[in-house]
Length: 622
Image (cartoon, rainbow, N blue to C red):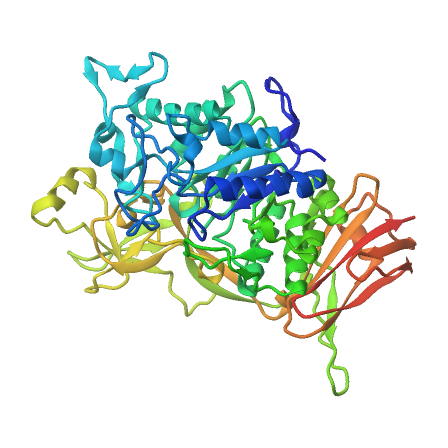
């Protein structure tokens, strides 16, 4: 089940993009600053044990260019290894084969010799270190410094310092892609990666809260023109909506739709709503770069791991129990998320190995169709006293409404809902025009003011932010609407907007357009107010359904309860989501892969599912 063909030239839609990429992703400095020796040890094991099951990629995660010395950490400055053109190159202390300007060429050659594909994590734009050094820009056509209009262009000419990566502000910033010099720098980066033999790039700090459509678009153009395919992945995915993803899905092969996923039940749980939304929006397997694109639920934190933020390790097993691990990988498979294993395969235990190589899960992930959440399930809990039935029809569950501020693409019509409201001669608000269904609830409003011009260095922003606004939580309070958090968010911490002390940051600068859209200067996203539906109980059980290539039906049932729960569905209800299948009176043979139980049913499937666990049925119906 190869995910990527071996051909080196791509003229039509390549096979590599027809199914989600599958691979092993080494945790680098985010939790384990890996060396060349350790990486190749893992790659050899992947080749021997996981490649026969379709795992083809080994990917070096971020900070491969940062020296592993005292004082170096995620957002440190001055410890990166860059070449004369300001481009990151591997730290020779950890990647000795990179010496002499070879970059990752030797590592890629060894990985390819194992029959695998090689990938790296890369950051947005240009590094602050290169900006401060004001390095020249490489003209890849001439092989010398980029010159235009009689001048040599350098890093400070193209770097957009006020658009630094929100969670690594001392690391990287955007480049001005409207300048040919900015495009020349990005082109030199990705042509170098191609020369190294890279097959996969994970492009970070350009999506979600950090959206940079211009850079994504240009990088996609560069990759499209190469004579061999490179998988293009975006990260991270905090605050991503289907509308935002539709703007870039045709430019890439995969894109994160969640924050970082770690080995906690809370993190697993946070993926159910967003996967439902993306399947409903028909984003699974939508048109992508030279093929298709896939919503990415992040790595599978299974097996032998380390802690977030640690530069040493790995040194512990996953905190998820077996039922929770089965729930996670089953959801990933049913949603057709790229399967990227995030542990150390040198200590791959048999339980984890059997889980990530389960043939039914891999078949579903690669070849299933019509993947969607299945709403027609009910549940009852087993109690020690007499059984109490809690009937929950998910299709008709009770909902409570909460208004919340969020961010969406400005192309979405829902963005055009803001207008100015005068309170007195000197005080105005910007209010959301749509009224609440409740006659007692006023539409949400923000107090507006021009950013206060201070003396000194802040004066340089006066022209840049002319016409922009600070939006305050209330009159007289110095808390301004902030569109992009300064750190990565995970699990339940999602949020499109928050308030923090007012400052001269692009993420606190807003502009109200004539269309009624409120645009953020940092992300280019627009503020909106939505009615969040809070499920009054029905979120405790979930189900997904899909069809197989041989006519089979896959039905996954998830128990999100903290107690063992009996979950049921009627066979006839399958016809409600697959109307082309006549399920009325149908007889179905079933096999449940985790318990091994098999049988025949004509009316109902009912099974007791452990807390945080799942069941996965393969149905063959007449």
